[in-house]
Amino acid sequence: MDSAMAVDVGSLDPDLLQLLEHPSTMPSKPNPVKLPLEELFTQWLSLPETQRLVMSLLEDAKAGVALSVPGNGSTNLSGSLLSSMLSAGSTPPLSPRSISGSPLSPKSPMRRLGSGLIALGSPLKKASEPIREIVPQFYFPSGPPPPKEIHEQCLFKIEELFSGHPEGLPLAAFVPVVKEICRLPSFFSSCVFNKIDVNDTGFATRSAFLDYWMRDNLLTADTATRIFHVLKQAGKSYLTQEDFRPVLKELLATHRGLEFLQDTPEFQERYAETVIYRIFYHVNRSGNGRLQLRELKRSNLIAAFEQVEAEDDINKVLRYFSYEHFYVIYCKFWEIDTDHDFKIDQDDLMRYGNHSLTYRIVDRIFSQAPKKFTCPEPGKMSYEDFVWFILSEEDKTSEPSLEYWFKCIDLDSDGIITQKEMLYFYEEQLHRMECMAHEPVLFEDIVCQMIDMIGPEKEGILTLRDLKRCKLSGNFFNILFNLNKFVAFETRDPILVRQEREDPTLTEWDRFAHHEYIRLSMDENGEDASNGSAEVWDEPLEAPF
View (tube, one colour):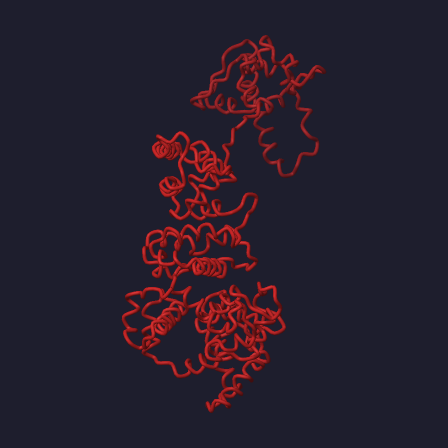
């Protein structure tokens, strides 16, 4: 037998070999694409050598002789396997059918060990079963639980602080718990204590503290979340002004920089109110009186709390808590409130800043266009309303201030400022310049200067977005309704401007409050404001109150 021929036949598909026994199964009209290949195969099968080889292989397969294929090198076909395939005829057998179930069902006879097809321990059974994968929890409404190590350290510290006090800790001894466990400023002690001592027993027990602090997973929460949780009322998702009063009360009672106010409780109350008004002016950007957690996180209030805790001189905390800033705000309000009923009307506000504002802008303020007044009496502005006004007037670079004055100038509330609206306010400025013998600046000239200064996206109109992008937006508003600041801008000293830019951390409000405090404190002491004023910036003066 030719070995080369044996290699070729061993590589053939058994189905093709069946063509020898049934040549009639060839299609009468073969596909033209397959015709050359089929013709070559038919010619090869018609050769005498091929027929002898095929018949010899069939006889060997029927006799059970093992068939070896030398050309493959690694493949040995069993004679019994080839015999079982060829003896079945020209077509492969159909899969067995059973009315009792599918071949893979428990009732199928194919699963019996005696069938020799699929045993019960077959890997096919395992592949057919679904694999249940346990997905670990990935969402925690109150934040992820603390690591085991941190949790154990916290428990150890709590045991140490509460050791020897089975009845609990009083408020005076509760400060270390707030500072070391809660990691909050010490003036939050009373707030945390009152959250735990709900029955007013005067003691905070270990179990009650653990239940409060661990229940909402505050151990690993950020500082803003912890402060928000401590201050807010139960069932509320926001902070109100009243929520800050306990913190300010404890701050006034414990901070060294505010000890001098303990003999004047009326000014303690005014100081606390002013701080709260300033917090909501800057932090509550929605202006609805409901301070959200996201607003607290975006603000610098947390950093101010931490600075108050670390700084003995309260006047160095320029954000929100400076007593000098409160003194300036309160005295400016007291100056124009001639009848001292703690309310001011339009005539009172016209005296602000040595009559620097126009009648038209004061009318817009009292129309409550920028902010709805909190004073229940019509035509009156409360102290809180005045705090919003003076913060907006003396620092026109902050976003709350830009929004405040934009609403005043936008007469039709369409979100844009047109040249017609600019002219409406500038007309009074022009008239005042003529009355005061100033050289008048025509609107046609000044409007080009304002447009070039702001650089709006759309020519001819200004949007709030345009004003927020420009660093000189405050001068735009001063030109329209504050004559004193407009003239000061036109005659500004370049050296003074350069000095102000040397310390970018100070805002326009910081500079204004500093100089006003010097003037007011000198007037209070009966001294000339010019004497020693240069040294006050480095050495804060003692408060007159």
